[in-house]
Image (cartoon, rainbow, N blue to C red):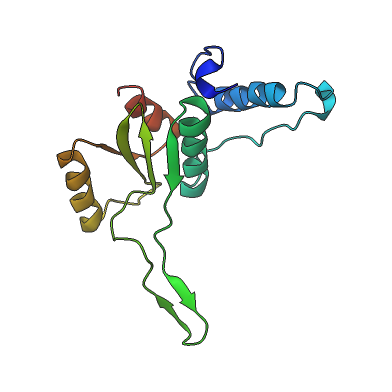
Length: 150
């Protein structure tokens, strides 16, 4: 069964509903497994940038059927020289990139007092100038508000 063949479900409106969606998905994946043995998904959170990124990725891929990927924009530890080397990605690339309904999307995850850098603002303009969608998500509710407007 492909994602387009799946029965239509209501979109999650909060993290609790996202977990319930994941549980229903697992019940379908493990339909020949006794109910008590079906893997229970971990609770989804938005209490850190990492947790929010995981929740957004799950929603994009499993709920909305997007092709989406997490981009790590960190330096690489060089043990030989004892320093961090520049990473291999372009500065300012969003934390999550993907395609949803044929449209490129870039989502920058910001948590707490974290702010968009100058490089990120340049990439935002490039993506939007090419017809793509770019937005900043500060919480799962913030993400839902923006993604549901597309």
